[in-house]
Image (cartoon, rainbow, N blue to C red; front, side):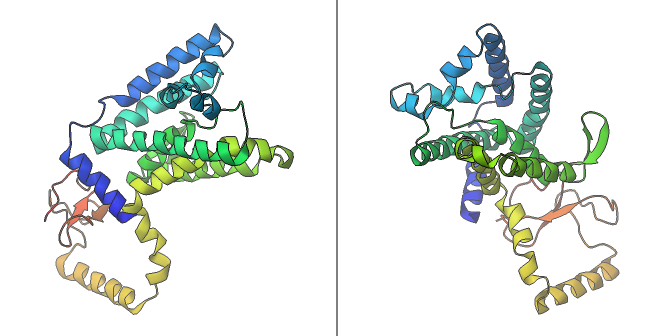
Length: 287
């Protein structure tokens, strides 16, 4: 998994012109257009464009692309809120990652949706139901945002200030509830339709954030080891001696200069180099 994560970063770094600038704005425009057309056609346009695997196998290959423009709700207020949500997160993550990596993230989400959608279609045998949706992939942009900036306060429903990491946990709970909250009698119908998109979003997120997630996954294994205990003692001694523990290799800021600044060590640099949150994703890797 680490090799995939590293390969994607290297590809984006070496091909900065790859991708579609302002991609999320095109996605939003497509959603708005289909939403308006649906209002005058009782949802006919969504039916013509959505991902129905059986229809794709019959030659309607445009559905492999057009399903990304299908609105996830027909209620005007929720549709407007979701478009504002995408308009904030999409451009923000594109500026953070660059156009190439952001496009890779979205493209990978589309491909995983298609793959899981076809698998679900063949395993369940359901006909006449859309087997893929970009709803969860779009929302996984918030997971990406919360991973990079977990302590940034956001306005829940534009009113209640909550840190991004707690909203991300709420999002994961709601995603799980979409499955476990389904009545048992409806599971054979709902699960094959909903699960492919959920899996696509989670797998896509893990692929792109394995570098961030792997230390958390293996922390329990190593937190009581002798090496971990010695490392903690060494860091305490180093902080007493130098007056700080972390120092950015780019701008020189330390945790003593700004106690609220977060620091990360880059796994792609050849050595033990520390970077502040302003430069962890914006520096030239030292080889």
